[in-house]
Length: 354
Image (cartoon, rainbow, N blue to C red; front, side, top):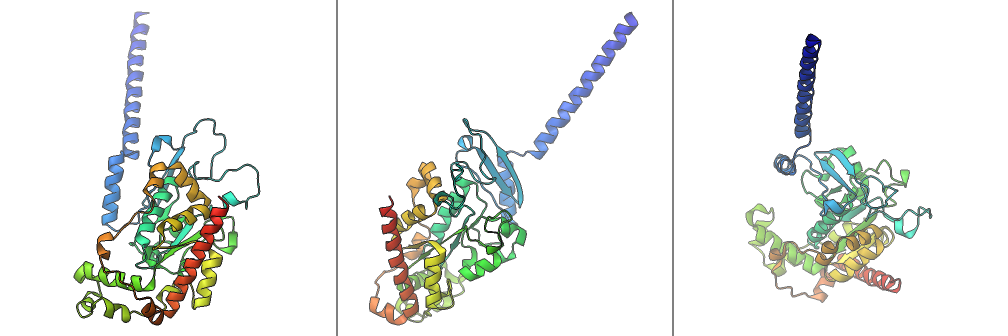
């Protein structure tokens, strides 16, 4: 009996030691495969310095979110937590406060418009950097995969990566037609072969005279790193404006003026103006339901409004010659006037609908 008790005790000690080693190995694996937030930030910075594509979607109030979706180096991981009495999960990648209500109504109802994402056509020197920052914050709040960086260039990304982007932030100033050719439809998109029918296209325009003046002072402020800096040393602001080519604004949306007008009215959910920031943001909220829900759910983001970037690079006189602008930029000026009328028309319609 003493020998059996002794052997049993030895066996128990050995069993305890084996279990302890297994527990230590599990802890080491957890520490190795689930890095800390600080490690993730460090890895993101290192990858950015090496020009590796980085997609990161982080929630601002993680504990209050129903899920967190993170992209790092093209790899996807997500984690769900049930909140309250939630019984239906939104589609992967969309936070519950941004997802459209699913109450058995028609899939094409008002609240589910543009749920497949958004694309911003970034017109140069028209406040696009500010809009890009806003869209980046909205995508982070909703769990959308966004691409708002300049490098690596949009065309250089793998097609599989581009197809997964749901918020395009205007990288590399692509026009509407170029973006359609380089942005594959998402695998689960409801419009199927018809392209991006359920994506919202938005843009922001600026008075042609002010765009040209802003371009001059931007090149002047950047100095020798700008490829047109030497021209700013031989021209003043007025000379620069008078040597600016007409039709650049039109080329973002079509091959001619009439096509550009048709695209803006028929395909773009919101067309904003630098000169009308409040109306532009209100029309965007009104016509894109998931943006409205995101802003209503995130009070700090709503209070911040439209951020203002590159402010110090635009310290120019701002003296605008309307008559000269019509003569110098007949195409761009006409499209700007059309966009202004369209903005006021849609703002009035949104006001009527509350």
